[in-house]
Length: 109
Image (cartoon, rainbow, N blue to C red; front, side, top):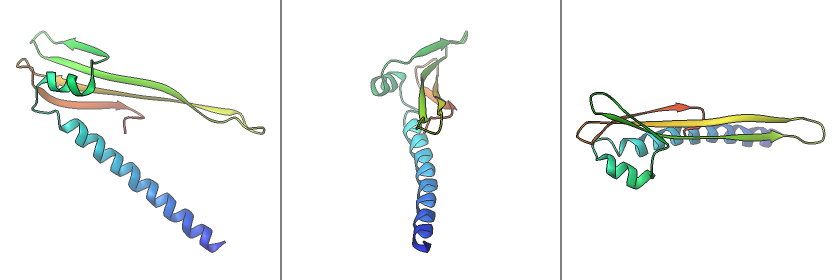
């Protein structure tokens, strides 16, 4: 019994490290486009799901995704539905260079 408790503790700790690593990788993957042309971004990620042009001429390219995950639903429990989403936005300068990025949602990494 004690061995099972120790093994479960390691699994929980490994899950925390995994989430932290996913956050780091997500930021690194997004950071790589800062300073590059918007064309490079679109070539790597595909067409954005939406775009907005500012009156100053700059733009924002948005990559959005959403889905529903279902957990449970066995004989004795009802299913639980979780809405997942992520919006990844890249700010593009008037010179067509990626200036920065931001993300919003509960499933970006």
